[in-house]
Image (cartoon, rainbow, N blue to C red; front, side, top):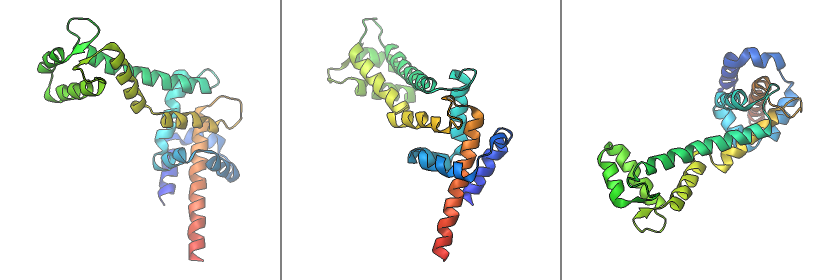
Length: 205
């Protein structure tokens, strides 16, 4: 029942695109088997998010024919760069003497003009970034801290899941289109529902 509702959601929101290229059941089963388990689990829980992820990358980084693996890699790099930039900007706002490092005294002055929540976040970031515990965050420590935060924002596992969306390249031309993704997602949900129904029938037999 849950898979039926999810399939209905995909078809309701993206139906005009998906209906154009409806896949045969065997193709849905093949896609289900080819996709990483993590992608299948996410697709079953939130199919609309998978389609939206693909649509964002296709619209922003896809060419006239669709999105290639390089576009997905660029999306990952851009998201991580944005996370690193945000983290460094927040900390460098406390570099009051512009020497490229943030001392505990400088941080205290910055925290004094922030809200309690923002100040607490800055304090935690400072403690995490101060790798040698000397009460000062230098540029090397800040860059390292920002890089770790970027990986938490978009992990290697998440990057691999995004790259796996190329499995929805149904015509094998190396380019991913929104029509292929919506048709593929609907087919995988249908295959998941069929598989679950089969398992229930075996239990009842």
